[in-house]
View: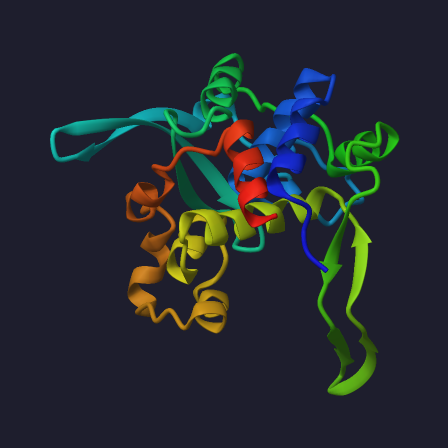
Length: 241
């Protein structure tokens, strides 16, 4: 079992007819985010805090490499499950074609919230419009404990692809295609240092952990890599049979 190919997910997202929802899912993908980090509203009875961006949460910057300067879009994210801890996501516009359109969309809103709907609205839309129809993603075996007692064991299985799976797709892409390690993933996606340590053996002094999430420059050079064109992918498939 494996995640669907990232190009399939990107294509499905870009085919969404509603611009606001298309940009919402694009944002979710580029953030490697949780849906609560994108949506701007929450039901009064929902325990989810809407931490979605305002138009001012996207800026432009440059990354200097010797005499060269790479243009970048910097997204400020309020990390869910971390009490809104700020993290900065830097994306090179020359290598990621989705970055500039999303930045320009942000600028339309000024200081206002951007995605003025709930996570339930986003979930309902993707289901009704069958955005990820016939796609699944793997869930590893896990156990549920309560009061120190094992409640049940859930075996490895596949689940219908949905909003949260986008986060896993992006994280997998960052590791497999761009060579991210646990330190990079923590900075980019807002995972905790302990999670990164468990996945990759990354050791980070606690005193530096709060600043890690602002250091987009640390992983930025790894993103300076063009996505393969369809022709390149077809030739690669011929080579590997």
